[in-house]
Image (cartoon, rainbow, N blue to C red; front, side):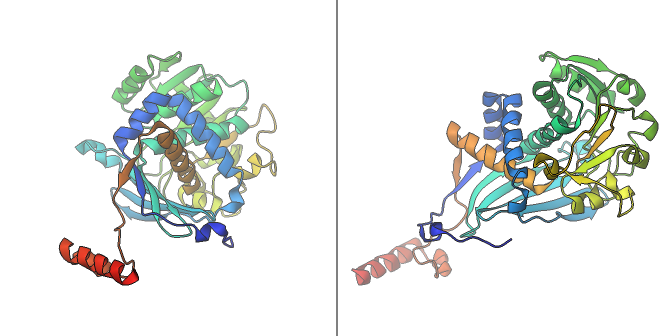
Length: 368
């Protein structure tokens, strides 16, 4: 993509970075409402996916270890560069750490100045669920009212509330290999007008399900959902498979359905799609949003969203949370980039304050 330079290049620039902390982000979401926050985020996602070709895109850079992965996820248009740092370490819960921890930034393309830095641990959960709903609106049957939710960990409440509040799901059928996780999820959902059914197996959870969301955490090849368990008309929202060597769906599930992805080059490496040959046909979702490819074409069709998470979603989430926090007055200023009287004299930072002030005064006197 060719950069477009406009009159804004001549505008004065300020060394001002704003920060949204986890505490402030949680306060903001509580004040706005979880479902309303995801509603706004889904709208931002649709706007940005709708201008897909405005962005420079690449698969994320990842560092893999036996216990997990650390990733950097960049994306940019002609105005802003965004990135997210995120990890995935399922072993962390044994020592009281979250499986996923993240932060990110927005910077000016014109100057490189980092203008906004934010927590993205909570925000990633919100944007992942908002993305799932944005895509399910086009792929799930409009009369879908029951969802099986396989994997009841940290992401599960957000998926449940997004599908309930934004897509009309009325019954949730829950299953996790850890019964304590299911009890936790059921307790958190109790205040909401949802019928919650705690199940003892995946098969039980799938009974009558219109939508199946899989959001498991183990960093391993796994078969959470087999081909024999998928029935006509079902929409599969596969969220947990997100790195090489980690899957949730049997290959037969992909062969039985029509598969939609975010960014194909990344999904072929990291998604359930990694099991399939290079010529296995998939559809990038932005084409559906722009009317260039069909979504669901019949009530009996099986649709699969092979979700791995893509950097454009983080850009959308960052710009939405910045606007929301700015309107609420909860952004904090962060001293990140040094303020220099002479931008060519970085060494002045190391001078005693009195000497630096004298140098500034001398330059001012000469200029006068």
